[in-house]
Image (cartoon, rainbow, N blue to C red):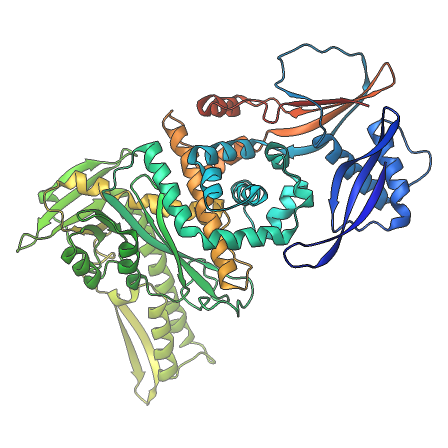
Length: 602
């Protein structure tokens, strides 16, 4: 066994570079032939004088021997790593465990378990990509074999260990058994390959979106009558100076110190993404709807559900004139509700809502005034917290007037009262604050007093009430309300994208690379939804975070024994699944031992 250094040239660019390979000499008849065991890539950094010692140490580990001479920590680390790779890519037969009997006599005390790599999420993710026909779609778009494998690796990495492309590259080499399932040596795949494949995905994103959703339609027989639309944003770690869409805006993560980009999503009623687009970080939510719906070519009569940030009068008029129906949260501030005119609706969580349906005078729009006891308790608690904060601030100002060095200047007092009102989240409007000047000096304050004067139709006086509006006037209260609750799925989507699939933050400086990061997240979400949809059909309603916990327990490991005949036996297989994982395998019709069994006796 030795290491060969080979100089070669890139056929496309003509650039020369050096690669390294681990090679073994084998006698075949009367001839000696050399066989490449491993491609070590271009970045093999061990000094050349240490190569013979490394090769000797690899052979010792494979045969279960100890080193007679001390070796450096660097050589030992390389040797252990190369040995693990050799056992993974071994050409030994692969079989499902339990199919045949194979008895050998071993020394139990010699048992070693090495090279643990995760395989649970990887197996399920690859299966879902197969159901979607993603490899075939990529082949039709001109992706070659290694590019297709890298695409799958990017998506699996985003699902299993959400992070940047750099972190995914490290995860593929150090933590995952995906290379065994795809039969691709990711050790030899450079980081820039991941970036170039991300660029390729962005160039073909429209074709990929259309092909994927056509396949989703075939799998789940989608009825395209409800469209959900909302936006979220993600922040950059860095200035993102080369990204024209990076801009300061309202960060939903409160990262006011970072530039942002905005992601708009259109979904169907089952939560699958129909269309996505990256906008500038300072885009106004209301200005994006028309462009997104026109690009989607949503059919006339489709129901569009959206939040109040997008439901401007201009957008509602545009929807109405183009034949769309809409169901939105009303932007009107005044609350009203008549319990005697309401009907009761029971939610999925067994909560009873009271809903009052009011038809407009022209009969073209309906409003639903909804009262929720749970929401009422929540808003009462919120109001009480800000009331306490506001009155505490006034108390401090009043107490300071009695102190020798307390603030008594009228202008300063009025400024502080103004700041308290700004910070009170609307509570300040329900107070009459009286500032009494000092009779001897009108520019100084003698006393501060206040009293509550609640304004009707507000959260302060009417907690737990919100209003929906729609131009679908033929539906009853329960149908309209239950349809609106689909918007909560959008919020769940964004939580999944942001927290479960690594949408935030973005480390790229270039616009196309940032768009690639977002598009990979959206594709990974589609794969997750396919998995969850199949599991929901069998009564399993876990979120992706919980599913990932269950799946990630399964690992592939190498068990090494010393046999009685002096040889060393290496067996590589997956750990036995727990009952929860076995249930998922049964529902999805997947093998319980992903990757099968590999055995070598050396």
